[in-house]
Length: 322
Image (tube, rainbow, N blue to C red):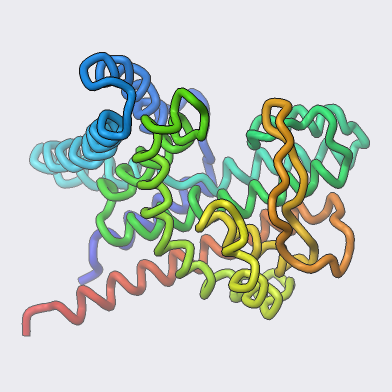
């Protein structure tokens, strides 16, 4: 008998490839964001704006996302098993972001091909937090490639990992943690203490998927005709130089796969930021690298689906009653 979560995972992954993230479709991440905006003033009013209140806030949102998903699936399953499977597939589908990432990156690439640098900057600003108004073409390409690399991990591979472990509730809890990190995990005066728990939880949850990804990324590079040896070498050599303990691995792996150098100077809200460089400049970045990074992302996600689903089947088989 096929373990029921596996076809749900496969179906959800295919749905993401087909549909992406239509804005008209209800999405749990938007619900998590609304809950966070409503809960933050209540928590800080009662407990103040400190690390403890931030921890309470994080646990309520992330725990609520996981427990709420579990309760919804259980309730609908009791009505009819098909409803439980349907909502499981839907929740898993909303946790993956491969097609949406492709769409955003491809729009940047298309604008560059048309020679419209201003439009490329505008489209890039929708997927990165850095300032884009003064970037030259190479800077736009670098930012887009780095965004694809980072999002390959936290937008696709990590949700697949947690979905394979704990189904839709685990995937939803991860997405809630990722949402909070993007909302309050900033080193600003307002969120330096309150957002500490959200930022650290996101780092912890991505830690294992990021290290497992070092086994997947070289295979993905091989599949799409990039540099598997460079992927492995640069990921381990330079990944730890990045301020993020996890995003750095993906960005370094991408740099090694393409044979380019990523990182370096950028700015956020007008403040200059010099990031460590990743990779070796065997050639200059070019617009086509955006498409290459997207193909690498798809190959990585498909391999991750096979690896994580296969691992789940293997573990359950080994634990089956004699």
